[in-house]
Image 1 (cartoon, rainbow, N blue to C red):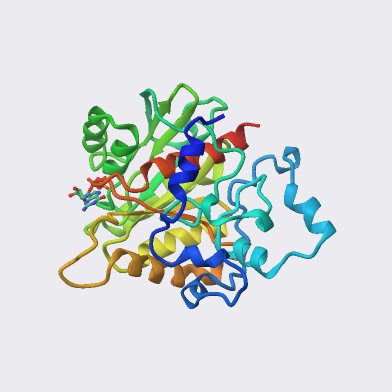
Image 2 (cartoon, rainbow, N blue to C red):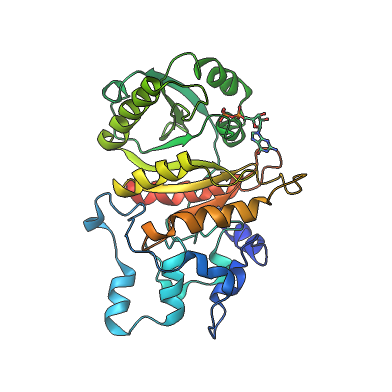
Length: 314
Ligand code: GDP
């Protein structure tokens, strides 16, 4: 049981950032206009529920049998990431992590990183560590802020150096063991501006092999730079993961860049991004705003990972 969770719950109240999610769940509907960009998805992405689902309690299914789902619950189910063990009918705004669409459920637990250990660099998916521990792969365009985010999560300067030295030289899958119980996996960045077509193809087959064959992959954290407008290569990547039923969480980076001299604000870029991918999803994947500069979203992301991991571990 996570001791920090009651404190978290208090902090969550009234702290939702951007996109006016606070008003999503206040009956009576009408639904806010700002929410419409998340509506009407038409493909199901079973985030975190695709691993051994038969062994999990399905609270929502038993409730749904007794009474029809309300408009509010249906809406929550469409735009929010409602984790296993939570009935969409029971979602309240203090259950939503600030700056995200993520509902915290009963599987959330101990989330802080006490120790982290570099285990291995692998050139191929089949060379990755062979054990049953769950893992999260971190993926994103080159320069998206991946090293900074990993460093902020683990709070270890040495790791950053290690990552910096490796990324760019050769394309490797780097496994970091956290608290001796789960892995953070650093994948090669994509979209190097000057990469040849051959290099891009290499990246694809290499990384795709990992995604499609890694049984212990709980979810991909797909990093998206919120300080720039949506990029085609990120959308392609998200859509490829979606088509292949790889669970993912969009982690928007650089959300501190609130007053860019020109262009849109991070929350506007985030909304534009979601708008562009919405046709592909019946239920929207989890998303969260972060900043490695201010620490925004760090604890919330770790809490989210804990609930995905603990559910997977059952
Ligand atoms: P990587 O190539 O994806 O590993 O990206 P890095 O972590 O090396 O970051 C790329 C650039 O973005 C660096 O100049 C960082 O200082 C900057 N950066 C990374 N994260 C943030 C962030 O949260 N906020 C801001 N303002 N800049 C960031």
